[in-house]
Length: 77
Image 1 (tube, helix red, strand yellow):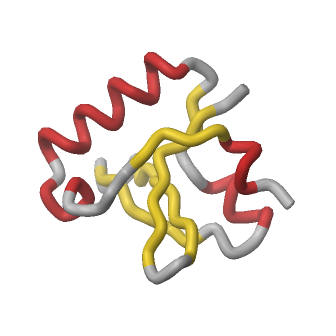
Image 2 (cartoon, rainbow, N blue to C red):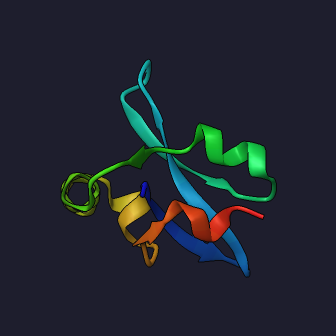
């Protein structure tokens, strides 16, 4: 099982994407199955919890959203 950090914006699911070149996280909409290949996912819940805690402590723009940890399979069609 893989986990993602997600939230809903205007009823559309979004998930966290990592940009290694810019060393930043972004929210991207999950409007198609191909978008799941672009999001940050982690096979262990403890790993994704660590990432979520870092985002909450260090990224005020993202932490203002109701970020949650979800099973990646919830977003597959």
